[in-house]
Length: 116
Length: 116
DNA sequence: TTGACATATTCCTATATAGGCATGTAATGT
DNA sequence: ACATTACATGCCTATATAGGAATATGTCAA
Image 1 (cartoon, protein in one colour):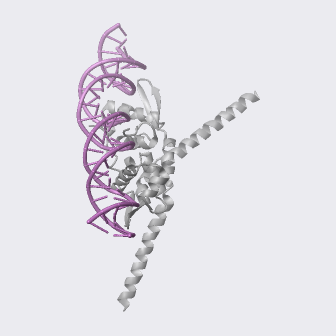
Image 2 (cartoon, chains in turn red, brown, blue, purple; image 1 turned 180 degrees about the vertical axis):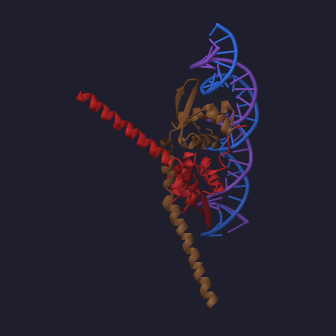
Image 3 (spheres, chains in turn yellow, red, green, blue; image 1 turned 135 degrees about the horizontal axis):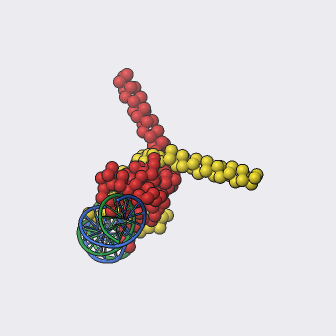
């Protein structure tokens, strides 16, 4: 086989930097495609394609308003990603603690040695 | 151009389901490659390649122990992902609240109507 | 050294894009 | 109907992989 499809899931969808930019940009309110093109400096077809991917995985919603289509991030779709990452939270806290403890132990040892 | 490199950053590295499995498996303690091959049912070369990618982006650490190489997840490397996803937390909370409010309003309206 | 075990790398192929360009479709105003 | 605006899609190309098989490298044990 070959590389996996990016269209399939949230993880692949946000792997693309441009799409992450778009998601941030559309997080607080709905905006027409033209806004994205202007502010993020991307070609219009490129934006449409990225929006298509994001829509397929449920990361944005659309609403037609006259000639415009208003897109907005469906923040809820980001949660699986957040939750997956959160699985490692206790580990990085523990590991940071480990680093701290080692540093303190080394500091104590250095102290003891200098006292001799 | 073409598709972006998965080796370049954490987002692309975790876009691959197999690699996510490996990261979870190696989260709590270090394990030799053979363990991954057996438990996750993957070909040995495939595992080595995924580990290589994960190592390049700093998501696992290695330590040699005789014939074995012991790999472990560097949970700290997941934090950028967690923090990026966290940017959307207030939005999904707000959006869920919106849903709740709409539901309550509709419930009130239905109640009022039934009283007539 | 030889053999066995453990892991890494190389080579090859198939495929899923992302980018760019041209074109298609939809809605509005005149 | 026609021109204009706003998006979407189709087509083509270049490229970065994953997968698989074979091989290379590294380590230990007898």
